[in-house]
Length: 200
Image (cartoon, rainbow, N blue to C red; front, side, top):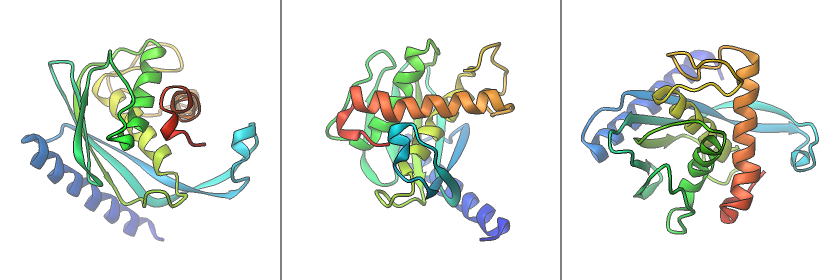
């Protein structure tokens, strides 16, 4: 797949997600985050035992369009599911009626437990990744969630002062810290807090 085709596909996904955001929330989003799916070439499932995996990013993505809120509430919507999930940063609980939102909630819980301060926001998730097809759609959603919060409420995981541009992965240490946070959301938060959503 050439890079121009991928860029075109990402652009279409962003515009589609923006239109859905406007339809649901009545205003335009202020920020977008993208995260690719991945395939595991070698070592599939060895990560359960701290093994090594050779993975590669693919040209299908999760897009999260978002806008900050002043009342502290968080509202999540998805192009794949009809419901809008609403909760506060101080009360992040499993919702059996919307298990798709538990992946983002796991990231938010992990950020909160690490002392990261964030406020409310509206977010819409768009995707070209098929659900349950082994392309790591949950991991892409978690990464997009962490990036979105960093754009709306700048933080730094690897120590030091948060820069105004937020989490844009400008150094290796920060990239590794973000990956570790998303892994924790998948393996620890999803297992201990949201068992119905547990995966590798």
